[in-house]
Image (cartoon, rainbow, N blue to C red; front, side):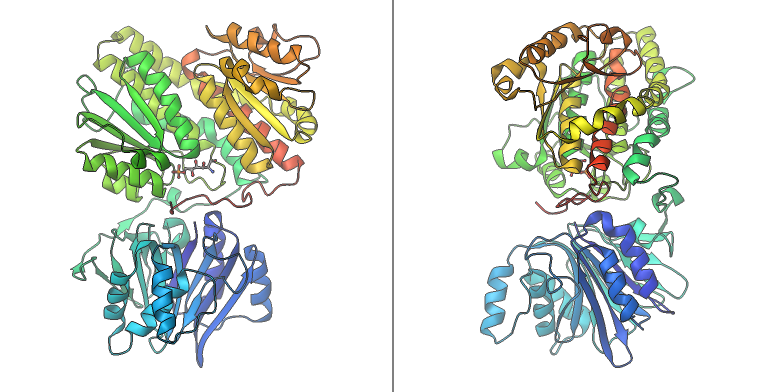
Length: 604
Ligand code: M6R
């Protein structure tokens, strides 16, 4: 969603606010703004559109402040205009906000009735107005507490109060907020990345906390207003690094990072010496009755893949559901089940809510996350990090293959614990997994062949992706990648479902991408491919050398390496991602910041 930064500094903050906002832009990029304390009052600069527009404004009207706040917005209430851009001001209050104030309409009505005048369409302005009202007769921290007591919703805030030029306040309920500890300087930020250029000493606020920072200290209070201690941690450099290297886009880099990333992931969950899957966390897979996986978008598809792998290998029932639907349909759950929250960010509001729903039913919980300091990671019984490094591209790539790697290792560990495979088979599967990074790198070598197919694909209005078995979730993921970054309508289907409806869509202008590396299901998928070909639909077949022999003359083929079907979803992910990436580049789309999207969706 939105990104927040606050700096209580000793030198000019403008450059550092902007540097931080560049790092936060992946969270939202509809508009941006900064504010700070000048000698004669608060100075504020805002601009609609990308951060570059704000930089242009600042070049003409720089900030002089050494204490200030900044924001990059993903609009929820009100269009992305300059007027709706944060920071918002009301009386003595200037603030930035990430999240949603659910009861903003009723609060606004009350405040209006009291004679307060609103300038924006945002829910955020209500908080500014309310806090300004509470400030009369109360010290800032007390006024903030009484404001927080009146608002409902999920939010993180950074606040400046006129007349308190050496202090900032922050609060979180839902979305994360970190406190950064510098030397004579203190910071507030949406994540470790935001404050990464300034400090690696960070305290993660707990849900409901609010905080007052000055040059040297942070006073944290819990939701009841009691003083609280939050441990200061030194975060690893990898959590604060953000480099594109020689790549044009983060997404491109992250696709090519995957072999190395997956190697790290797999090494964390298998013992490379003994060849056993060493799954940490003390979950007894032998007696576990069921697994419930919840996630959104790409993380959900990774979970689907997990279901295919775990059920087949370990005979352990796995339910997978999009987190946004899960809790509202009041699912029937068993206390003996394990819930696994799949999430790159560990902050997705729907996934977090689904996780908490399961916990409230007495289920043990685990999180497969990239952000180990995230809310999900802190709230579960067991954290299984994916170890793929910070992912910046809004379109998730390396987190997907890392999530699948974790679940593949879990499938092996569970199968062994349940006696479904013997030690020799476990060792064979571990060897197969250890082969995956090399084969993923080999599969990415198809990039030149992929580029040649791009112009035709980029002209399409609709594209179908077909796959069977574990290639079905990959087809869904391929379609999601294409639609989110190239804005081409794409749908993934189980290949066998084609004739039950989608085949009606086939015509000469609708390409079908068939993902079918050699496995026991390949021939069935190829039969479905023939049904498309018979109706004049253009086909791109993604397969290995053996599968390519089945391609009709003139059919477009992307050839990857032959591999064990167990790791085929990992091996064939890079070509599928590269296809979407190059189509988007060909169309001139903003690959790392696709329209309307945000990396971390911390509202429902
Ligand atoms: O951070 P999360 O993994 O929980 O995010 C879930 C989805 O929002 C995310 O995967 C989204 O679908 C991506 N844009 C997909 O590329």
